[in-house]
Length: 208
Image 1 (cartoon, rainbow, N blue to C red):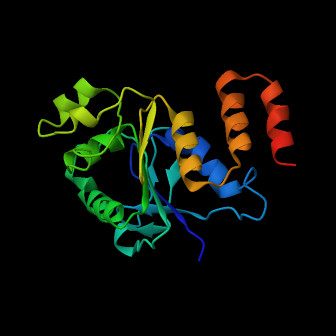
Image 2: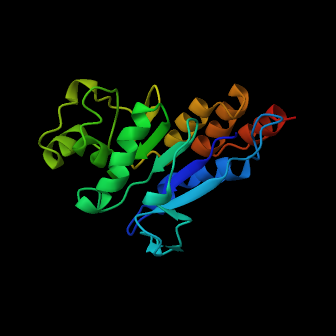
């Protein structure tokens, strides 16, 4: 059975932080030959609509209670203004279980604060918006020696990223999922990072 992508949605979520990633996963436009696009399913705290930071209203496909991750499914956690609140504890518990079961978990910006609160960054290589900020917001955080000053970091099945690095975040997840050929992924990244048209032609040639 093909893996599915579960995107956690909530009020104040930073909608742009996962834009590059979910667009490519859902469309599959640059996937390797023979690979089908991945179904993106939105998960809400409950079944009520949420409003993103950009003012977009999203009706979750399922609630957290209805989400049953299979072995190859992916869980994506966007940033937002509320990750220090208890309202996110249910998804963080599911995230902890997912990491133990070797599901791929990808967290960006404020979501990394949520992971730190759960102790999920205490023994894994990771990044966030800033080390000192993370230590201030989560006093019991013990993962400083595993913190890397990088836009995005992959440690096995966990990908973390700064909120200023949605493109790098997408690249790391796409690489772990192995849905792009290496040349396609690099030219795709170069195109959006540099805005140079030569990389568009490299990208097109890579998928012929």
